[in-house]
Image (cartoon, rainbow, N blue to C red; front, side, top):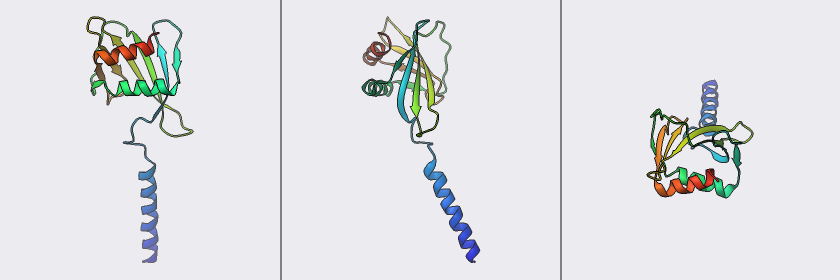
Length: 136
């Protein structure tokens, strides 16, 4: 009986540790850097906290269609890579985005490598702000 209690206690502690240490469901992590690629130009890096916070705020306004990956005929205007720190001292999680700016409507079309996001669109106001950050 005592062995059984010890066994169940160890299993309980193990399960508690497993559930407590999982990152699933805790979001993407902390955005630490964005690499911006425009055509054949040199890449630029964004690491300023206030700019990263603004980009995250704008990104939250994107209307996503998960698991949708349309083929767009032309090359993206901007390609960006978001670097997320999920846990200290572990490699960052990367999410790539291709962005097309529609000059006629002032909106943007975005394709993400994150299946939970897929294809998204961004309204005129937020597109202008995002464009000012990425294309200088």
